[in-house]
Figure (cartoon, rainbow, N blue to C red):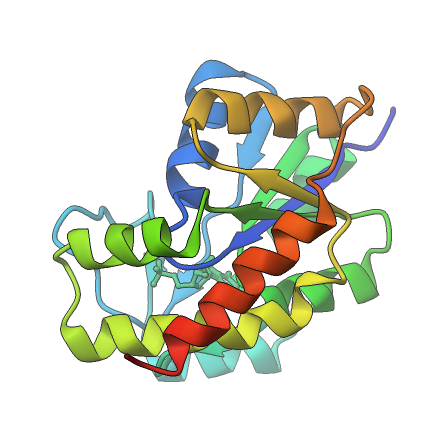
Length: 208
Ligand code: 5GP
């Protein structure tokens, strides 16, 4: 049987990766989305087992020791990781799997599984990203500043991605990812635009 494809989706906090992944999950029946483990607490609208498996530091460290994580990373004071079994089992069954993870983890996946396709989702502009982050209202100002700082750090890993996709409209962004999955002449974004967003984010992260 043909093995499934592993799509690794990253993007700055607030870019709407989750919405795009949910769209794919709801409107296309051929994706299996991995549910990560995390040591952070659930946000108000989040459901254990659906958004994440919420576990303790001890449980997380045990999973690392037992080799049960495909990758993991620290992000703003907490651990996040991808359970290995789910991904391996589904790929073997021929299912395509989506991981929505930050860049350090994505690079670990690529190192272990070179066939993985790394996709970076970009906002229409850095200002828009900042507005989305501020408008979320589930985070304190310190956390928002921390996430912008993280975004700046993540720009360092952006260039190792296979494709850049714009998220100005969820449907269009999801369609673009679908083309990438099907090797259907996927276009990547113009690198001048990618670099422009990168530089704007670096400016924002310095603080105003
Ligand atoms: P949030 O706290 O906003 O849900 O996620 C914070 C960051 O952690 C996001 O960039 C998200 O993509 C990333 N993330 C979520 N799950 C995982 C995971 O399993 N591994 C890694 N490396 N990053 C993850």
